[in-house]
Every structure is written in structure tokens, then in C-alpha cells.
Image 1 (tube, helix red, strand yellow):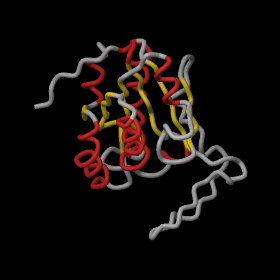
Image 2: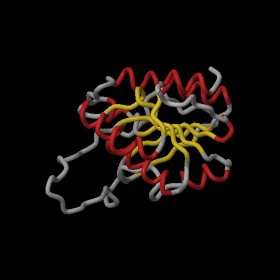
Image 3: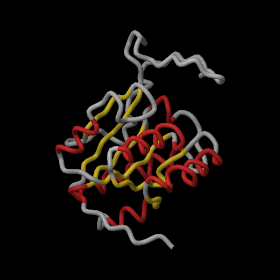
Length: 193
């Protein structure tokens, strides 16, 4: 049985990964997109009310695409031509006054962004992490946060992946070693909501 979750909102940040129009337009498992977005929005509202910092992360290359990664891989990514508005954060998430927006160019939200700086300047040591996709953006961000010494809580039912087995594998093999896995309701209770 996992231990009870205790959170000090002033030392917490909710970091929401890639809940943007072009990504939520694709199906997710085991939690569908509506569930992931709905739970993330509940978390964001509760964090704002409790005084926790809310960070909305979205991904996209520069207009000319020259900053996109192009590694040589055995499984090349599918051709990608983003449609206008693809990288816009879904309206359910905001942004609201006081939220911080991070635009990233790769899977993880720390590399090449001001995320670490913004968290440290606010005295934040605990990250509540959710979004799409569990095994890419969420896990990459979690690995970087771990290496920077942050405590982490992964909100399982506010995450989704393209396949249920990808979500489960990431939680079981990686995320459970980087932090604690809890539900939206567990986190809301810990925030006093």
C-alpha cells in the first residue's frame, strides 16, 4: 500500500506535458484523451487555488523547422507537417493568470528551456507531472527532473500513451523508480481539495 501523499503547495509545481491541439487529436490509452485532459484541468485548477505553480508545456519546432532533431535511427519518425494551431495548448488547460508556459523542441521539458530556473527561483522541490505521452514527454521530463534532484509525483490517470502497454511499462519500469505514482484524487486530497 503506497504511503499517504503530503504536499506543501508553495513548494510544488504541476507540470503538464503536451496537452496541445495536435497531440490531443490522437487517441490515448489506457486513459482516453478526455479523461487525461479533464483530470489535468482539475489538477491545474486545484493547484492554482492552493498556491502551487502551474507550468503548461507544449512542443513544436521553429517556423523554419531548422531546430528539429534529426538523429539517424532504426525506426525513423513519420513525416510530420504540423497544421496551423497544432502546438496551441487546449483551452481546458488555460493558460490562466500566473501560469508559466514552456515551449520545448524535443521530448523532455528541461533541455533548452527555462523550466529548471523558474522552479528553483520559486523554491519548488516537488513536481506533479502529467500529460501525453507517458512514455515519451512525461518520462523524458521525469528522468531530467530526477537528475536535477526534484521529488516527483506522477498522476497516472492524467497521463496517456498511444498503447496501454507503453503507459504501463513506463510506469512500472522507469517512473516508479523516479518518484511516486498516484491518482488525480490522491493528489487533490493532498492539496486539501
